Image (cartoon, rainbow, N blue to C red; front, side, top):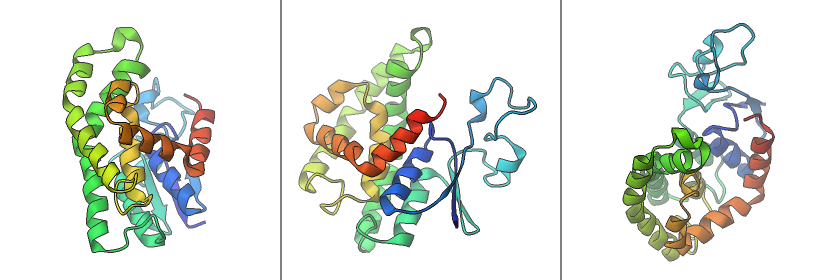
Length: 220
């Protein structure tokens, strides 16, 4: 098996595993947990983690996910997906240089315009215990995201329910995996019905469901 994906399911590795499922790619999955989730990353017998010497040989940055594709190592989840889609082709891949530009643009857009705010909504509205939540970060996210959500809503409406090309592509996976972090802020989705319907459709796909079932089975 030539493709190895490093990273636990409760990380951005979900993006890569979802895409691999969509493409029907066989892969070897090596669970790598984030070091910050361990009480003592240096304790004997700890699982493979992002600061383990063995993993740092794969990704010296100490982050997940990473892949090893028959000896070619690549990091950064959005870049990995763009690479795998281009390599394996099919309807998920950009059909020409213009679509490739759009796929890159939307991936960077999601990372720069939305991800930090969306993560703050995930953490400070849902994931963190109440005593750890920071209302000011929620307030800042709710002030910052309506504009980008409106842009995405119009784009989806103009592209037949997708991010680009009037079909489901790698761009949908990359953007959806960022936008889902904002789901605890239901008002953002109520105000942007095309985004809501699109994300629901993305999450109904069998490849996503298979990934999410594996994620739910993984220890929190």
